[in-house]
Image (tube, rainbow, N blue to C red):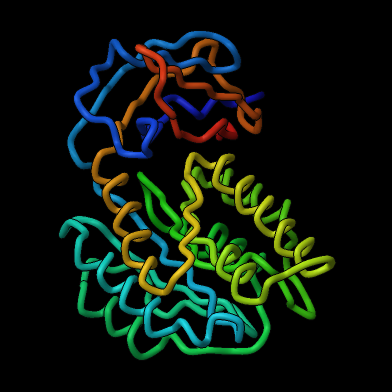
Length: 281
């Protein structure tokens, strides 16, 4: 017997104007939801702030060592702007993947983890960091799941538990939205990359864009150290202004089936960010 378990789909939806600013004031009638090409009826539409479960996933490899002071400051500032009901976990990846702080609403505990436990390594276990967040940390919370990733996207691990496709699949399976603060443009400008170096960075950027687009997030490219705090603040503002939409898929989804999702907004001209599908459970 095939069991149908996905009875309701939850979609956090960001709507941005041409300047990349969040658009408020829209109503349910402005949104058109398509599941496997079939228009769906919205069952709930929430413009109020919905509690979030956020993994701060921080690159701690040698390539970011010089920026750690600014990274700590930006991450702590971001945490200070969260609502009391939001929960945070802090992870880092360098020579290995580590959970620096498990799920908590205690802001002081999160800030201590960022200030004292976040420390540099040498290599970059990037894909394993994503994968571990998806399979070990995010499944232990329910509701809105978000990963805020800071990295240059270049994996230098000697041994891997997962590759890029396995990491992306695992994140989509737990319905996480991934926002990326990418350090690739900084690398490009700092080292004036050409040839093979430029190819490596461009490949990393392509995966980061794929990761964000596939999960409903986006990529921000700070160039200077001072740009890190505004990057985190832009993500925080977007999370505060997301529309939370739910619907019951029709026809019903079967367990294990991948369903494509598309969200349109009228009037047009806006950029709409949400995940592009889900795996029925």
